[in-house]
Length: 344
Image (cartoon, rainbow, N blue to C red; front, side, top):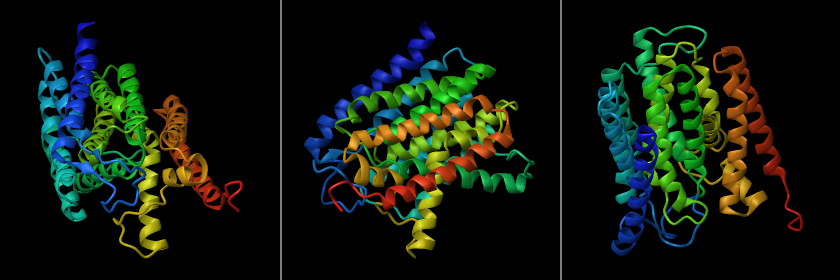
């Protein structure tokens, strides 16, 4: 009971309290405020709102893992996770405070964290399910994958509770698998992250009192990537495609966004636009910020429930990912062609 309290209630309340402080303080100081005048295609709010929710999540996570590491054999790993995740959080939080960072510089900063995890924790993708990777290929592929997942959460961060809800669902899948296989590290970190994100979630959904911000999105994305790698490396029974299936929605959204911008529209791959799946659901179906997130949650929960029983079966997990991609494209096309009744 004491351990559960440490890993859930402590980070939850720390995160919640910091969110309250940020909301009150940052509005008065006009610091890290997301306002209507800023150039952000995915904006669907009209009230200046603090976009520093990641600050409370990161601090709550840091304190939570340090407390849970007392008298624990995983203290080194937890300290390494804090150190490795900081560059991703810093890059995003700097954007929240100042202005957008050049995408290449941002990826470079995130890569520093990925390299730190590789060196300090051997957090490397050695196996992709059907064959292993030599070290000279595994390291750059790992950096690419970690950077990609880190940015993927930022891409889906468009509505109240969307990115945070999807992330908590994914961490719950990782925690459940870790519990089954007795992986104390992944279980502990995943539970702490769920609690820390939940403290933010209460003030973000449904009314959007505070936003996740780039710092929160990049930090959560980085941790999703690292938990994916560690879960597979520490538990050979789990297929490398299980985390891919769990994160299929943000991963495919990222790849499809790059294709849509670069090849279909001739725009820079990292340029922002407002035609993501969640944006189309909002404009063509829900017309409601929080309801849009609920629609996507249902999709992600369904995907996770389908994938979880096959967490050790690579061929079926690959098939699930392919079928999800086909389904995504199907509903995307249907929504694009969908006409709201009464609007012609």
